[in-house]
Image 1 (cartoon, rainbow, N blue to C red):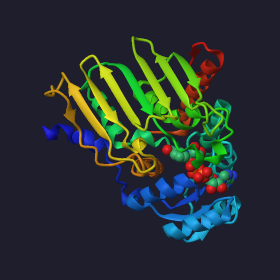
Image 2 (image 1 turned 120 degrees about the vertical axis):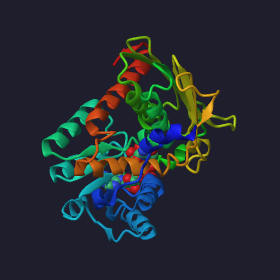
Image 3 (image 1 turned 120 degrees about the horizontal axis):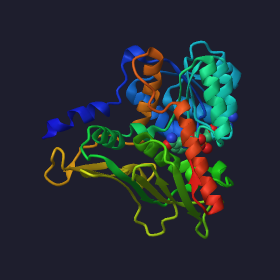
Amino acid sequence: MINLFEEVSQFCDLSIDDKVKLPVAIVGAGGIVDGAHLPAYKKAGVEVIGIFDTDNSKAKDVASRHGISKVYSTLEELISDSSAKVVDIAVPAAAQPEIFLQVAAAKKHILAQKPLATTVEKGEELAASAAKHGIVAAVNQQLRFEEGIAAAYKMVQLGWIGKVTNFAINVNLDTPWHMWPWAKDLPRLEVMLHSIHYHDMIRWFLGNPTTVFCAAGRTAGQYPIGETRTISTYLYDGNLTATVHSNHMNRGGDNYALYRIDGDQGSIRGTFGLLYDYPDGRPDTLEVRSHVLPTDGWLPYPVTMRWFPDAFMGTIGQVFRAVAGTGPLRSSVADNVDTLKLVDALYRSMDSGAAAKF
Ligand SMILES: NC(=O)c1ccc[n+]([C@@H]2O[C@H](COP(=O)([O-])OP(=O)(O)OC[C@H]3O[C@@H](n4cnc5c(N)ncnc54)[C@H](O)[C@@H]3O)[C@@H](O)[C@H]2O)c1
């Protein structure tokens, strides 16, 4: 029975062929670079040649701990380094577009953090700039490479649960918002920074919905001013639906992060281990019950890698393969414009109290 999983596990492979690897320079030396990008790059054997952060002491600290030999004093210095072929940008979204546009104009390939930008218009400008300068540009929506999710995607593609009828995500977390002081005063928080991962991922599975509704709330005593609890529903043509419930102020001490995909021939269910104790986490789980194979009840899929840091090998690896012409981008900047449109529709619904068209 384990042979059944061979094709699925091949699709989840995050290893990067040495032949396609390119030297990377990083903009931003914050928590996500320190805790996820660099550990993933070390694991995959990706060469990081230099790093820049407006906080030079932070860049020096990260560089010394991760064995990066160059700390650039300015962005211009990084851009003029001809040995940097791919620029990995990981700064807050408000600062990202300006950097993106300069790097694209220098014709260096880009991996940008999510959210790509805070407005659809900015996202479109970045996608147009990448196309104009002929660079490969992707967004670090690495949930698309997370092993459990990638395996579920392949199972759906293989028809194991038939025609999908609903995708549901339910997370209830005690999120340490103090880790992101720059996010404290953002009026648009939860959808823009966290559940954008789920919205992007559901788009990957099911495409764009026609209509969405989003309700949001806050909890007394919370650190950030923005919404910390959202409930989103999507409607598609053809009797297909999706829901995302995401709460970050769980005072019950019982964090959970569940997803479930139902089809007319079976179901897939799983957990995001990372979110049970962010950012340490625990292994994911994934199970499938298929009337097509068929399985004898719920069959566990052995997830061996984690969202953090492993999936970050996937987002950088796709850039290298796209540059070499050996593979497509799974999370391109061009595609991500539709994720920003979905986020925008959810906020329009939240603001108006009515459903919004995509
Ligand atoms: N993909 C994910 O799962 C994931 C997880 C966490 C954070 N993020 C995203 O990554 C980005 C960074 O988050 P973080 O947690 O590392 O934040 P952080 O606050 O720990 O670090 C941000 C860093 O960016 C630097 N910076 C700000 N403006 C800059 C500029 N113009 N040029 C150079 N450096 C600049 C800051 O000095 C800081 O060191 C955010 O956009 C966040 O949404 C993504």
